[in-house]
Image (tube, rainbow, N blue to C red):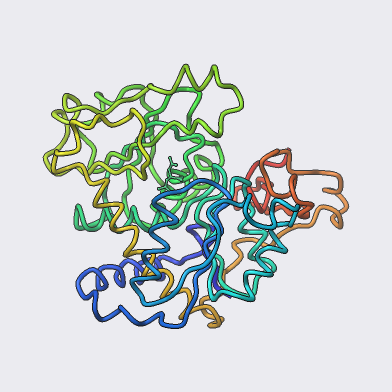
Amino acid sequence: MKHLIDPMDLSKQETDQIIALAQDIIGNREKYQDIMAHKKLATLFYEPSTRTRLSFTAAMMELGGNVLGFSDAKNSSVSKGETVQDTVRVVGCFADIIAMRHHIEGAQQYASEVCKVPIINAGDGSHSHPTQTLTDLLTITRELGHIDGITIGFCGDLKFGRTVHSLIKALSRYKDINVILIAPDELKLPDYIKQDVCDRLGIKYREVRTMEEVMPELDVLYMTRVQQERFLDMDEFDRVKDSFVLDAKKMALAKPKMAVLHPLPRVNEILTEVDDDPRAAYFRQVENGKFVRMALITKLLEWKDDPSHANADAAPAIDPSVTGELAGLRCTNPKCICNNEHAPNRFVRTASGTLRCKYCDSKIK
Ligand code: NCD
């Protein structure tokens, strides 16, 4: 079965095929308007969303298909205590494909282990957001004409921003990517992305303190919202919430062809005075999100039973309950599915030798 849980579930070739199909859909809308007739997409959203849920819905409708699901888990059997596993087993009897968002990290990975239809991760906690990544890759391609060789600045909440984590992973597949990280100390990129993605896969990165010092070198500026809902300490949120604000003055320092991306929603981090700047690509990015999801749904349903496209496990999962030396070790992330739903503890040994949780990537100590 083909699922999209993590951006690395797609090979570079598969990613390129999805981006190319999205481009073709943009140029030939009518050609695709009935290709999903009689097919159903279920959108299971356990966490708020505007763009992601509605763009999945619009995508399936534009392909001639139908959509069912919930946007508030309180209105489903989840409020009676139903587990993620049972819910997707049930919904898999009604829909051909499922897009799911959950505040618990690894929920979609766990769901994909029991579901008989493809699962698309539409965001799990602060962990991953692979369909936003496809949107971002399409947007960079359309704005700049290429992805190889870009210098991209990520600004804001790099700790909890799942779109950042997923995009950096995906960029590791491209040539000569230069990443600049602009974040307050409290919101720096997690170590697992720095070590297991940047260091191991050869992405050059550096951390800086101000936007001004790097604006002139950027091809892409990726702004993010400080993720209030992920903070355990609200005083800390108040201290960092307005750390970086993009305004017309800072835009004046940038290259004439730089593209400003933002997964949206924005709060204060981009002033509205920037919106009319031709380099502000964030609303075009939203529209690209619909087209790339049309391409993704089409390709996943085409690939779902083809063993040559099945999700390749980067490393075999280790079950600590049957592995003598690791018995007793547990994932300690309270937001991980394995600490919320009696999901088993399963670890993966990364190429650098570190033991990580299979569901949320946190380090097992
Ligand atoms: C992002 C998300 O949900 O992670 N939004 C989106 O999907 N376009 C970013 C955010 O919420 O800040």
